[in-house]
Amino acid sequence: MIVDDHPMWRDGVARDLGEHGFEVVATAPDGAAALRIAPVVGPDVVLMDLHFGAGGPAGAEITCRIIETLPDVRVLVLSASAEHADVLAAVKAGASGYLVKSVSAAELADAVRRTAEGDAVFTPGLAGLVLGEYRRMAADPQPHSPQLTERETAVLRLVAKGLRARQIADRLVISHRTVENHVQSALRKLQLHNRVELARYVIEHGLAEE
Image: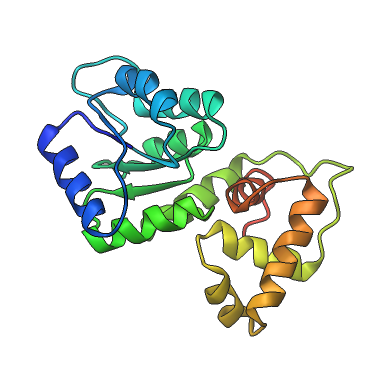
């Protein structure tokens, strides 16, 4: 589902995604329409703009409300803005990732596919901004936080940066299966459900690398 207030942009993105094998189940011109339509069509991924010219709730607020209503839906922000505050607002609202509109059609299709699979996807450079800001904002580690191993922590740091399992395996010189085992172990220990929640855990608990 595509939420954007520019008709030509919506149509172009829908066409590009269709050509890459995706089914665009609906489009919406603003957040209010998105809130009405999303529960009806049940999208797997929502491509969400942040700022709507007609006013009304901003994309970050709509993101939060859609996720509250449809917790299995993943929201990928696609915005013209690369402002730090906008990126943070989207992530705090529960967005799985953030892309700027200069992204190519092929890159967008890959990002949508990865988002549907549970990855956290960011335009290069933005992940570092998010990690850095949350590292500064993170509270002191909770005294009874689950104990992660050094290797699990290393894997989660790379998950939070948006790397795929095979990329993590190459970076750490371990097997793809070992990466998956570490991810599943961390999910169990932290009582989380997917890689997006793992990425948020890393960010919120200040585990990111300096």
